[in-house]
Length: 576
Image 1 (cartoon, one colour):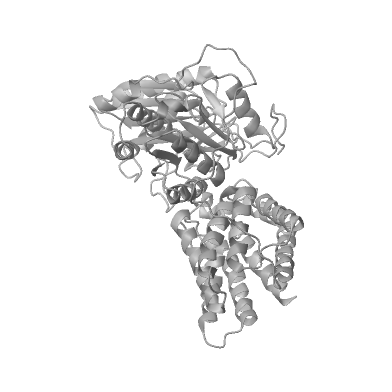
Image 2 (cartoon, rainbow, N blue to C red):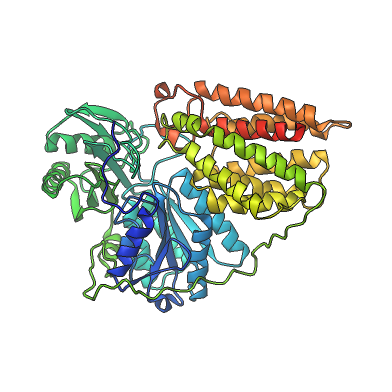
């Protein structure tokens, strides 16, 4: 299976080059210096109105930057291809709109673990700085009859949330009013995808394979597996199958659609379907709904939220009343709705300077001491372990994700090595963990980077004024609690949390009088490794792997294996 050809400059620059081209051709957009953030160029116009920020991984164009404009989004934060955006960039976007005079900010987030984590942490940090921020999570996927703990995935219906929220914000609605209205909208819609081909992340192999006579029903916008693989059907039959699945009474994520219902229909090209086929599918959808007595108040046909070059289509249905239709019809200058500006193209767009840090920003001051050499030794051992595990973790991840778990952890290891070369790390435990949290949030990427960042940020708190052995047990518990709060996973869900939770249970022995660190830590490592191996037989309850059939998950979870490897390296570093 060969790597698919892409017309790009480099794999690493894909997201930045795409946004630069978009901004160069659209005077209504501007980049935020130092961040992968695009904002309206007329930010002064949002003073006194609620700002709307969205975003996510690149590769879904025209989502998300195509929906920036008057009457829709104020700005978006982009990640690398199929990767959640950085917490720091999300926070910078919130600061930018807050400092522009916005009357609160609403974050519109698709229901994926990484997006929830990154936007959630940015929200908490922004609130700590005094910003008025709320977050709505869109889960419009109607594929799974019994959704897992991770919930319904966020798909193309998200653009309708952008539109409704944008119309309300433009009309001067308050943050709470917009939040309540769009929260109701998210519960009144459903989306289902159908694909004839896989997609491939630049520089990687296709995410899956379909035979010449096969199609897949209910897949996600990152190439995640669907709910059923079928023989190729004519368009009319394929659409009938999709609508029947979306409205099946036995489907817990179904849309209650009956005669007399009024809907907005979105026929969305997943990226590689020809416009000829898209028109055929649109006609099939209209006829299918009409046969059911459904009134199609509005129909949108085009490429709204894609999955790179996937040859497929998704149908979104939103139940509407007259008020919602008016909000859908409200004027917007967002080009992907579409609205194109008649203006010269230039690469010399003025950039908005990065906003100043808010008053709540934590400053980390390096303090060295006798423990600095030991910290360097232990961190060096951890980095070596992660680099040696890179290909093993990638191989484990290919079964349930996009095969980059090893790359992600190796990126963290190299960032820590570079940080250590730049100067001695802090010796004080709280400062050390906080500094590592900031480093991983900035450099590691992926859900793992945010999970480790959350863990380390929370773990630092019990160590602020004490460093006895019980404090380290408290730190472990605090870190795990933070990961569960925002990640949504629990022990037994086949994630990195399984390893960490097993270790934490063993570390409770540190609270006993006379406890010795190394024997307790040795037991904790053994239990973490056993827990990682035990994920081999678990059914995934959270993260992307939760959308994969348990019969296909024959290897241990890569995140759990990586976490156990980090703990083993910590032990060996302390012993050495």
